[in-house]
Image: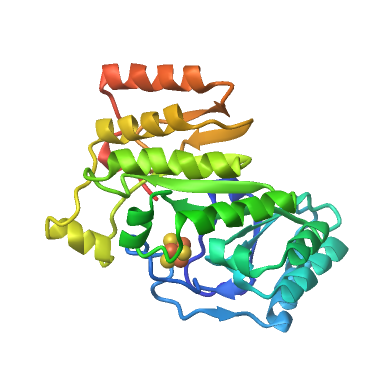
Length: 288
Ligand code: SF4
């Protein structure tokens, strides 16, 4: 496999074969993100992608899941993605799921027919890092998308019956916008009702604009207790049917998981217990 630069994938794709169909992120402007700053965006040629898939077939007997990287690989034209998915189906008949990262605008630019065709060709899950549902925060972090566009994109995927995993970042609005972040994020997620919703916790990385803002006292980081209170407020405001909720990433101060709404009371109870014990993962054990 020929990978260019560092490769990122969602935690649930840890055991998947990663196939890099594009290099970097077409947007590459979010103020907290350093993942693809060293890469110029480009879509790989069919020949490069096919060579990687053929090589993986020669080397691995059984591939259960495949993840198409990099940052927002759904930006590829639908025709090319279908070509890739159909070839995966042909040479990895045992593969149960193909996943991909997407920006909401990539989804909005695809037609309903495109999305249905992608689903038929085997697209099994789309990961969307929305970070927040609050419009001011989305503007501040230069996400390049509004909450109504996020909702429309999620609903479009639902209509095509493609499972969705949404990621939010606790602390992304700082102390000033923690309430808005929690409440507005719940509002957006409620309108989509994704199969999965998860929280990472903000970790600032040197060299990013948000890190500079923090250094210059223009942005405030939440304490572990405030992070948990923010997640609590989010959960309180959710109204979901069977969404799997997770906050068990290495960056989180405590691990949480459950099904919303079914286990909402239990989740809130777990948070209240953690808040009363005031015991959180030490900073040196956190990671991205
Ligand atoms: S869209 Fe995702 S990968 Fe691209 S800059 Fe923003 S956070 Fe980073």
